[in-house]
Amino acid sequence: QVQLVESGGGLVQAGGSLRLSCAASGRTISSSDMGWYRQAPGKEREFVARIYGSGGRTYYADSVKGRFTISRDNAKNMVYLQMNSLKPEDTAIYYCNAIPVVVGSWGQGTQVTVSS
Image (cartoon, rainbow, N blue to C red):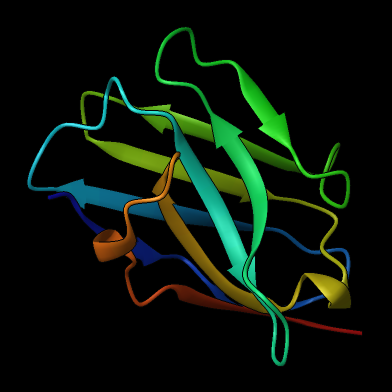
């Protein structure tokens, strides 16, 4: 089973940028569709972005389209999320996981806080 560790979160002002990283271990994820998800306080975890294993095609939630970019480095077994033009409503814990989700692979996530 793949283990996933997220990093790169922090506190940033509205309009700023952050780059999140997701390191996978235990098995290669090069052929897996991978996604970023987030959970804000008091809310359900929601889908943010997806990158397909074959071809690298991407898909985004409407709320982040045009601001966030998901990418991957299969040689390093890594997935990234570049977040630009951040808004206070982007404040959440961000997680990565496969698509479909592997329940046992949820990591600790990385906290992103955007101040207004």
